Length: 445
Image (cartoon, rainbow, N blue to C red; front, side, top):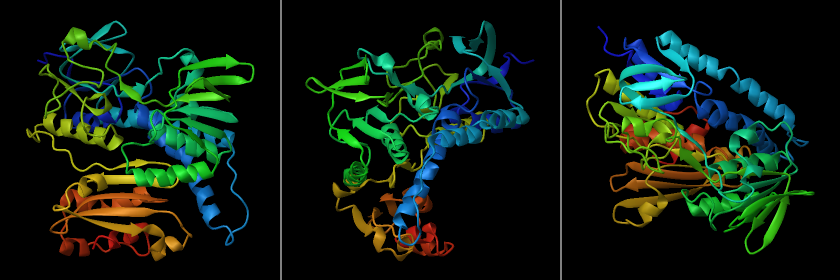
């Protein structure tokens, strides 16, 4: 006789849960998934998938720009049509993800979940019990604590704008800021980025970031370093952004892109005795919280690994293997790549150029100028560089690239970094030619 309603109950339905919850349910365990918003969480609905859909015509616009002289005319972006297209692409995803989970045998429980003890989550007054609980509530946009903060909007609101504001102010200079600045500028908005510091995208190789920001500046985006935004006020001419030493700028719409914070409050962690802090929920090397039967996965974790969809997916699948008895080992993270979807992109994986430079006796650094590669001359690419990091036995251990297709190049190189291919093994992979993959792979052999 079952002691609890479920073997495993997931709080949240994003990549931190569904990539493992589905297989776990299909394996015969009783699985429930609680979600207060859209099935699939942030990434499919108002994160990665939505963002890349909005970015698609920017890629086309940049290609047409590079091929000017070979082709004629300009690519103009119809913002209203683009957002409608984004909605068409995204709308089916919750039902598709939820349908897959139900087909696997999982129960979807819609409503706000709150732990009441170590084995119980209450949803709109109804208790559900489980032997194990996984907290996968993700993160949400941080809001500036300044006067007038109600005049600013978050990234979800930006992606639902049916009319693009003429003057867009963005506070912050991380992923969301730089990507949305790129998209809005390409669609015709006047964009000003108010930076917290004097460097954007501080987690990426700064010479590459400076190359991207210089191009964005050339295209009309204004960067205000160390802006110290202190207040927002509604004026007749628009929203006034107060910054610096008594300076103001007027915008039609303000995006607060000052980061994301863990959804660890208002879910009953205190009642269940689960420790958490401002960075998220600490876990051990089996993703257990301080309460032995409660685990956590995805962006809600307090962890050094990047808070990215691939990380959450890996953690979720690890918990499936752990709960299904396929492993008892501690989680061992692979090299996980990351990309900022500006134009050009910046992508990276593994050892960084800065780490390699600090240990010259351990690593060899190889630099390539992307336009020198004949393949990238086919579409007249004039901007881009890659840095490859090898250990002393010529295993590729890191790569960083800025280029129009940097994410594809880094994905191509990923197996060599993860599996430590030697040179003979590298030659066993004969990529389709010509292609971006072949161009990237050729550089490491």
